[in-house]
Image 1 (cartoon, one colour):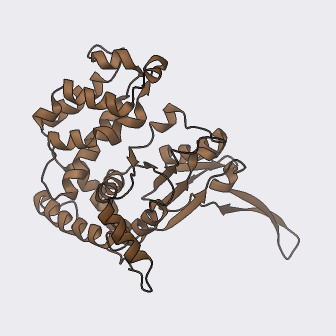
Image 2 (image 1 turned 180 degrees about the vertical axis):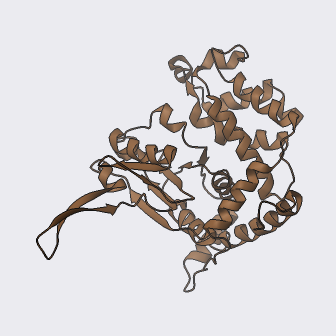
Length: 335
């Protein structure tokens, strides 16, 4: 990546070419799931974290490992379980005795001290343990024994949840879900994609992804995302969508007042703004459009909305509410 002082248009064009190579390398190990890959890259380029929701066997772990290789990032994985403690994530101090008999504490870093962290089945850990990770996500540092310790830069978390097993889990509170930039829903592959998966993963040879970026290059891309201009039309689309989803807000839509217990905070508007820029950069475009806002509405809002009890009883879904909001605000037509 060129330095920030270079021509932004030239930077965006070069970044588009670089990200095309990134996607090509990822596709060597991840068959299909193009939208999932784009959303994961969008979250990382925006400097945020993502919540990945899908049943087992849809290559969530493989995706994180591949992203780590191609982006040139150190990766760690934590399997969340009910008995997992905060120290198992953050690290702890141990008392060591020297050859002369002196004693001193030494800090042993936990798996959170990495650049790309996979938090597998995050909702299986206790709220206390979840909070330890979410504090690190929000603040970029952890506090151990009264001492603040900075995390690596960049630092991104891709947390997974299994939507079909809900016994023995601790659902993330809405305020903590809000800290994820996007929610990425992974569905089953198409028949042709599943055919390719079976053929490419059961042979003798396995495709190997090659690094395209490193940490410094990724940070440069993240800075570039924030420099991409956003037109007034796109900004108004973001504000209209977010404000229409607040059931008690002055600009709320009827569907929000009838079906939602609460709506998105300003953090949702920030997520849409950054993600729209990142999506445009991935596509090699000089600026985002209203179509980007529409495409990112579900990933940015799904985990930030909550249905009322009556709406759930009637069979309403968050997906349906967002679709109604897009239709009634005419954003899809504007796109």
